[in-house]
Image (cartoon, rainbow, N blue to C red; front, top):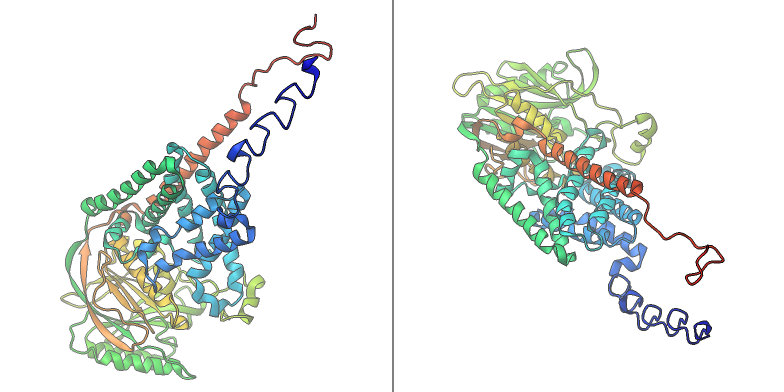
Length: 570
């Protein structure tokens, strides 16, 4: 019969004649690797053709956002710097590959932002970066899950909330002091953009990071998903309107007078007797400030190399300087000492000295620099000291913050909150000091080990964020630069003292009252991001569960060997 002939039974039997569904020449782009487009062609899909090429691209694109921070300070680049990385992850063939490229991009980012640590850590920085970069692996998987293929408008809108929230959780986790602290938060790249600093007064640097990642996500959608372009454009408009609205309605700091504060920066002093010569240079520069009606003089971190109780001669010399300039002097002692509880060891300590000697106001640094000032798990990682400049002995931690009060008449009674070096990176510390009554924030830093790198400029820029968040002016005083001062809105006051100078400078700081929304409500942006992620995964989990437990599909009953369509079984 004709139906039995393999030559006549048609397309359902012949692989040569059954048409486009079988012919590789006729079935079109869905079958032909040459015609189905960029998703298959190695010439058009670029990096996706080679796993090694993709890996190198992930590291390079992950490092790109570092250019938005000082010294390059290409702040505008932050709003598109994540796009190449996200486009690469979006095209990953599997979720596992996307997670790998998230990790590789995080590796590039950590090394680029912290490259100035290489002289201290050498090859160990690769180990630390590789461990921290694991935080970006889930984010890489999430980027592909949200953006791969042709997501609907609803999926695209969800991505605009979920992906920035995922990034913010990464910043939250790595901001833990034991993991290196909040250095290189994406929002910190916007330290010189006044409208965005107003956003920081509402939700801190966290809210700025959310904004930056949301814009990057929208641009990624705009470039890669035609059906979601309207949603992406609307997302960008919402971000712009948010920044404009905050600038209009958010409460501004209430200006309330001036404080005259001087910064003494001795500059780079090297050699066997560097500590004594640095002290002498600080004395020399401080004497030039006489007669300038000052409220406070600030020296940098480690400006005094001996405990003032053990060296009363040094305390007396500083007291003479205080009488000369007519103001108290905040010095910083890096030496072996004891604290009020009797603990002994090396402390980083801010000490206020007046005309009659130390006033009794002191502050011991609470958050130490990992590897620079202590070795985490020293028993296991102590070998790091043999390959870099890591701490040979752990410094002692302070136990509580301190708000110091200046005595005297007139502007006397000014309350300021001291921070030491690394601590200016932590938003919660400056917020706590302002809630405790500080009118001015003062950070004493060194950065002398990182001359010629981006670290001094990056560190100084953090003061602008802390000032904007709290609505209080901030002084960033260093041994070797960059020293800078910022007003209550994060605006620069006067000129910075660069790393090439040894100088003393006086700044008129505008004081401010009132309370910013960030000081009042704290890290609500982080809490909101956690809530968004929790809701997203709850919904996705519920959908997955419904798919697994739903009713079985209706299928026709199986036929026995003897029955057929013409002769059903009896």
